[in-house]
Amino acid sequence: MSYAVTLIPGDGIGPELADATRNVLEATGLVFDWDIQLAGEATIATEGTPLPERVIDSIRRTGVALKGPITTPIGSGFRSVNVGLRQALELYANVRPARSLVGVKTRYTDVDLVIVRENTEDLYAGIEHRVGPDAAESIKIITRGASQRIARYAFEHAVRNGRRKVTAVHKANIMKLSDGLFLESCQQIAAEYDGRVAFEDRIVDNMCMQLVQKPELYDVLVLPNLYGDIVSDLAAGLVGGLGVAPGANIGDRAAVFEPVHGSAPKYAGQDRANPTALILSAALMLRHLGETAVADTVEGATRAVIAEGRTVTYDLGGTAGTQAFGAAVAERVRDAR
Image 1: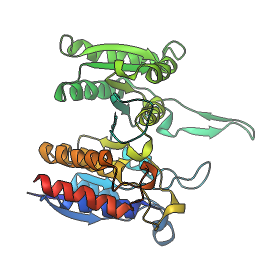
Image 2: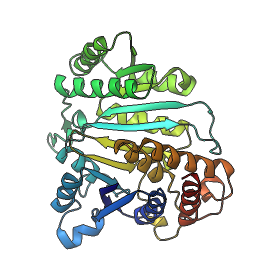
Image 3: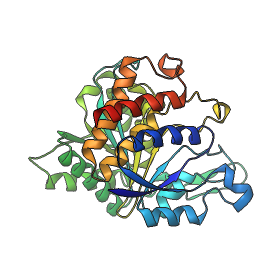
């Protein structure tokens, strides 16, 4: 079986992570037809944009992309490439698993969460403007259609993966109309799954406290865009940080898989970065392609290399480089075939 996949190496450490991850994927025995597309800072000088239309066209053609991290300037400069891809391709579901890994030092050992974040509206719709020289205004957009769509995705994910509960996270006690609509929409969808998947809701600030105190009580969380961005990083912190946190952006016609961490330009070209997050994102891609057994093999090999601790990167307490870590995972994948 051959799979056409758009590969966006990204900025900074991205190309090194992409090389290590390709090594792992090609060790599975599957055949990948890579369409390599540059985007980010590197294309501004040559094409005048960090997100050329050819990148979007490629993903529309292949239906799936594996993407390295891309730098997003703070406060000024070009708009997030990630946001641009999500909106252009209607990638409405951001999915970020957070699962404890043996060998990664954290305060917790039993975290197993899935954060499902609405990806197209809320404050991230980017509708904002100046109100005079000393004030700015952003508009929060919540619609019933998008809220019901993400809630249904969360419940279907729970059903497909044998998950026990979905928790809707909101601030409807204060934002009674916008977050109230999100909560109402989740409640309406939850009624369709009554008896199959349990449902509850939590106010977002309380949810953050609860995750720090007792993460084992939670399973699948569904959130609007902004809260989902924040809570998914919190969940990543419970299992060791963004360096081990995979991510997926799913739509009806396309999907983009990417790590959540930044491009770390000061480490570019040094063969020091940890490729775990991109490798685990590739495992999510394999599941999306229907290659569940192969995905299990890739995830299991990654976990085994980390647990063994002999060939891990400096952030995991080792001395191995990016490519050596990827090669160790690839070897275990080949051994498991």
